[in-house]
Image (tube, rainbow, N blue to C red; front, side, top):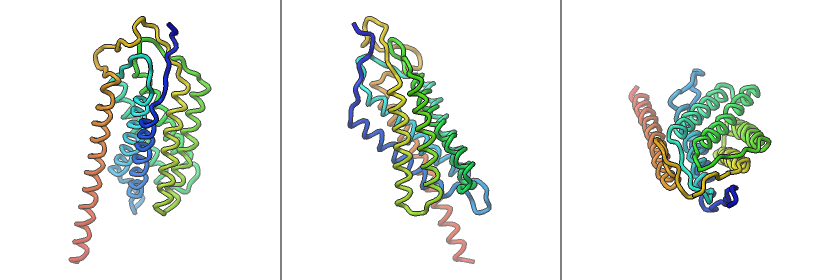
Length: 255
């Protein structure tokens, strides 16, 4: 039996992965308007919310839906610890990138630094997630394609950040979100193109078992639950912000 694993993509899940990247990016870019306060300080809750939207929904959820979209003729499992660490890394890096650029969005060095943070956050999340993928074999990596995936994430992410922070219209933010979603998906699927899966077990359909592993069949449920929890966190933050603005408006009217 040929040890090279045959793979193909399910187009409808690829489309869903792009939709998640776009939705997460758009929410994050809308929230970024609240990161920098009038006195120049950083609204940390807004920064974390934007990071959860972009890093959690737009990057992390997109990645694992993209993984489910890849149909392999070998059983696979995913490490819960590695997946959780990749989520934290994505949220932290994207939050940091948004904070950096929000302080002075017209300064090129800040945009470039933020783009680098964002690109490395996206690629770091991707390859941490891939490290947590367990099959009855191993993965050969084409390092030139890996390097290309990093370059795509940094370049497109930098352009999207500039567009998001230096244009004001809603249409421009949609354009920035589309560009950022394209960056995330292009990086992911380019990175997947760098992977050659090799099966070394006689029964390639035997699921890798172990503590802290979830099968690929259960991965969709885990991702959906995490995405829902992150969406609820964002909704709660937006509600709190709305309440604070409402209270402030009432106080202003009574004075």
